[in-house]
Amino acid sequence: MNVIPRDQHCISRKNISDSALKVMSRLRGEGYQAYLVGGAVRDLLLGGHPKDFDVATDATPEAVHTLFRNSRVIGRRFRIVHVRFGREIIEVTTFRGHHDSDERSGAQPGDHRSRQSASGRLLRDNVYGTLEEDAVRRDLTVNALYYDAGTFEVIDHVHGLADLERRSICVIGEPGLRYREDPVRMLRVLRFAAKLGFDIDRDTAAAIPDCAQLLADIPAARLFDEFLKLFMAGCAAATLELLLQHNLLRFLFPDTSDCLERDPAALALVRAAMANTDQRIAQDKPVTPAFILAALLWPVASARAQQRQECGEPAMLAMHNASQQSIAGAARHLSIPRRFSQPMREIWEYQLRLQRCHGRRAAELVDQRRFRAAYDFLLLREQAGEDTGQLGQWWTRFQELPLEQRLREASAKGKPGNRKTRTRRSRSAV
Ligand code: ATP
Ligand code: MG
Image (cartoon, rainbow, N blue to C red):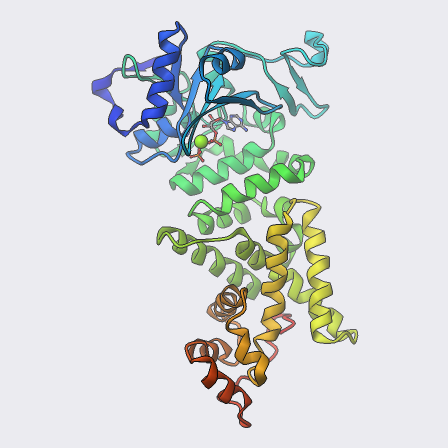
C-alpha cells in the first residue's frame, strides 16, 4: 500500500464539494471509515473539476441510510446510497469484498454474496469487504485512488498514481478475467482513454479482441446508459475513433459499423457529427442524444430508404418505413427511449421536406419545432462532403426572412438558386 501525505499531492479540500465533506465527516464521527474515491480523486489529482463526488465507506448501505435522513438506498446489482443535498447527490458505496461463485460459496438467493453467470459475469455483487479489497474490485488503477479528508492522505493500493503520471489506462488485475466479470469494462477503458487523452496499457488493450463478443450479452438498457456516457461527455470524436480502432462499435451499432466499413462518406458524416457535438458541449450549447443517434444511424436509414425507393416506394413513405426499420434494428442492441427515437425520425424525414423550397409549406417549415435540428443536420451532411446542391446555404438565408417575404419568395415561379439535389456518390436517399 502506498500512502501519499498531504504535502506530496495536489488535492485541496477547497476543491471538494461541501456536501461530500459533510458526508465523510459524519461517517467518520460515527466511527466509520470514509474516503473520497473514483473519478473525483482522479480528476482532482489531474487538476480538473470532478463532475460528481463519490464516497466509499465500511458502513453498510442500511447504516448509511439510517445516518442520513436525506438518503435513499438504490440499485440491485450494487446496492448504493444516494445522499441528496439540493440538486447535488453524493453516492456512497460500501467497500466491496472478494467474491466467490455460487457453487463455491453455496450462496442462497437473496443473501449478501455475489452471483456470476456461466460466462463469469457478475450478476449481483453485494459482498462487503475492506478498503484494500474494494480497491482491487474497481475497474481501472486510476479509478481506485482514495482520499482521506480527515488525514488529507491519498491511499493507493494498485499503482494508480504511477499510471496517472504515465497517463495510462490500465485494468486492475488480469484484464481477460475482469472483462469476463463485466464486459462493459471494455467500453469504460475506451471511454476514459478518450476522456483523459491517456494511452491504453498493452495488456489492457490486448485482451479486448478475445472478450469483445461478451458485450453481445449486455442488456440493451445498460448499453444505452453507457452510450450516453461515451458520446455525451464532450469527447465523442476521440471515443468514436477508439471504438472503431478496437472494433467495439459493432456491439453498440452493428448496422452502422457495417456501413462505416464500406462507405467513407458515411464515416465522414458520423465523424463530423461527433466533432460538432463536442464543440457544442465545449461552448455550453445544448446537445441531445437524438441528434447524435440520428447521425449514427443515418447511413443505415438513408441506404434503406434508397433501396425501398428503388423498389418503387414513394420517397417520403420509403424514408418513413426505413426509419422505423432502422430504429427497430438498433433498439435490439441499445434500448433507445421513444423521447429520442421520435425526434430522430423527424430529423430524417425533414431531410426530404427541406428539399422542397417552394410553396406555402416551405415558407412555414422554418417555424416548425424540428426545423432547427433538421437544418443543423443538413449542414452536417454538407460539411461531411455530401452534395445537396447548396440546399443548406439556401435555407440559411431563407429562414432569416420574415414570414411574408418567405411566402412571397417560396410562391414565386423561378426557384432561387440551384437546389436540385444530385444523388451523392454514396447511397443516400436524398
Ligand atoms: P466519471 O467522471 O465518468 O463519473 P467515474 O470514475 O466516477 O468517472 P463512474 O462510472 O461514476 O466513473 O464510477 C465510479 C467508480 O466506480 C469508478 O471510478 C470505478 O472505481 C468504479 N466502477 C464503476 N463501474 C465499474 C465497473 N463496471 N467495474 C468496476 N468498477 C467500477
Ligand atoms: Mg462518477
